Amino acid sequence: YKTFYRCSITGKYLLKGSHSDGAIHGPLTLDANINASATNGEKEYKKYSFRGNFKEGVPEGNFKVDYPSYGIKVNVNYKNGILVGQYQVKGIDRGLPFNRTGTLTADGKPTGVWKYDYASGVEELTFLNGVVINKSSYDAGLSAKAKSYASGTISKEDLEKENIFVIPD
Image (cartoon, rainbow, N blue to C red; front, side, top):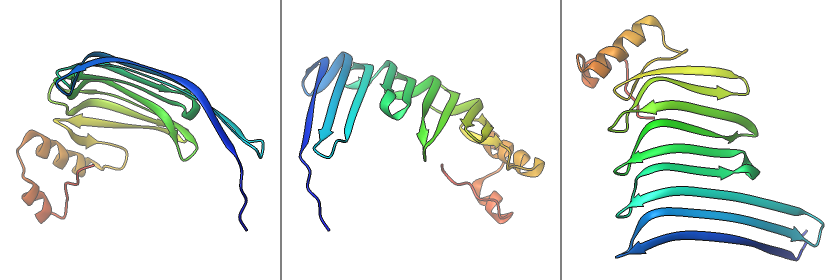
């Protein structure tokens, strides 16, 4: 069967920024508060905000997103359009909270220890030159091969000969 409802969406949003020649320049902010209600009694309230900065249309500096209705918080940094430095994303995945933190190099590659914190526990991944060189599912041999690959002392083709495959994630 089919049922019909009337839905009403009201709210406010405020977008601030500047652009010229088709590119955003300087700070860009968005604040929104949205209410939705239907004749069946369902109601929903959404609030979100965005803060970022652009240089000639390219992301530059700190970017923050807050979407509390979905438990999402993002705090990342850009340099010339490349994600760099401290990285943190919190959110909900399949109804469960998660938090990912780590550091990116000047060329945007993950480096050092990253923490993937889920309701079921924490997984730590160690990166070298953007390659995962250690995580809970790796044995010592696989970690050693990953380090060799990240250091450039073994090729993807040589790893494949050993039935080890490099898969972009």
